[in-house]
Length: 400
Image (cartoon, rainbow, N blue to C red):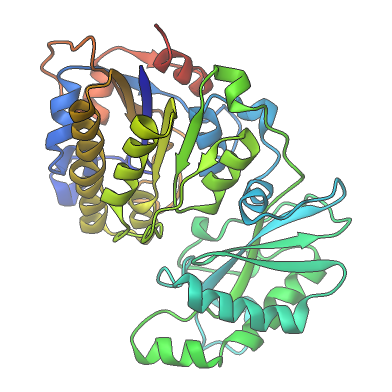
């Protein structure tokens, strides 16, 4: 038996008037998910423990079977593992986004954050910009490391886990109330704007109608993580297929193998088929028992507040990832169980993460059911199946 989780990050949503009261998942053309739903168990699962922040960090740990209350030490430390940063026990990791702030104001604090991803800036351009920041601001206490696209890392030697606002939670808002209380961090953010605002890459981006990556934004502070081996927990050899440093870092911490797919970038136009094919190959030809395929695009489109693009991302996930996995494993003649779900909702109406339960679909090629339901939030709720603790869902996947 082979096992697959296909994770559509932020795919769940709330009813939208523009879609005649449907959610993007209900509205999208999801032929494959609906076909599987009619042969599967569907239901709702609560991936975010009560009182914890609804982030992709806590939620994906939960889906992988790691209780966030036990294992979560912050988002950035997990990304540090992916980048290859060997954190000391006294280090604090900070996410360092390259964001877009308005430029008309005279005072930094009065600027408005309009894009947490700087139009999904390329990794190559972001690395050049981060290097310009590093040359001016790096010292023995603060070190900067390039990640993927807008997502980068700062290590604070002998730092503190301070409360920092996530940029995607405050899009369209004046930043004054959301800046770090720690004055060194705040001053570095202000100086990063001075360094980046007239950088040639940003001047060129504005000429092209793209948002400039004109400021660093620190958030997600945490200490060195310690995850139990996935193989020891489950008895399964697992692989991770993701373009996002957070998921790659979770895989490193869990002792899973990361599969790097050319053209996988965490955006709307990522290499969906290549990711699915890589997972099938690992399962059928490389001895893997379990594959986790993470697709970031629905979450990014939710943050952007784009209904049409979120629908498009869900349709790509359905036709290019789930169908490719299903057909590939069927053609290989292997028995498999596949779990499809979001990690959390990213509702268009709020453009950030929410904590409510999400729909799941659990398909078993050796035990196809005969149902009439489709895969979406409404029918997941109507099924009556509910898993209150998300970290137990994976045990359901691995049941014999």
